[in-house]
Length: 88
Image 1 (cartoon, rainbow, N blue to C red):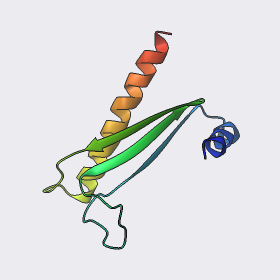
Image 2 (image 1 turned 120 degrees about the horizontal axis):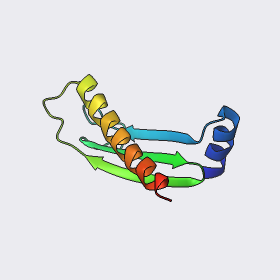
Image 3 (image 1 turned 45 degrees about the horizontal axis):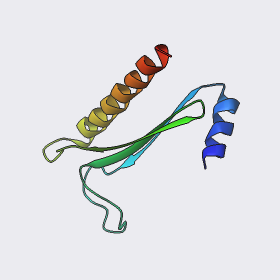
Image 4 (image 1 turned 120 degrees about the vertical axis):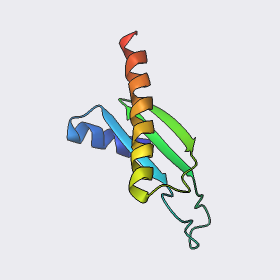
């Protein structure tokens, strides 16, 4: 799988890719792995993969608000990676 992502990065002429999955509303009864209030994401920078699991209380949030929350978390972690890389 990682090799496929690296090939895609080169094809798109980019150094960064983000993959995210999770449940933004009700648990899917047809998916045994579906978990409410949990998201998983991976940030691939060059050949380095950074994996995350994030839990958030989203009970009273709209689907749009949940997606914004998750996107904010991805950007927060991406900023940390960028800051770390700038010191190397």
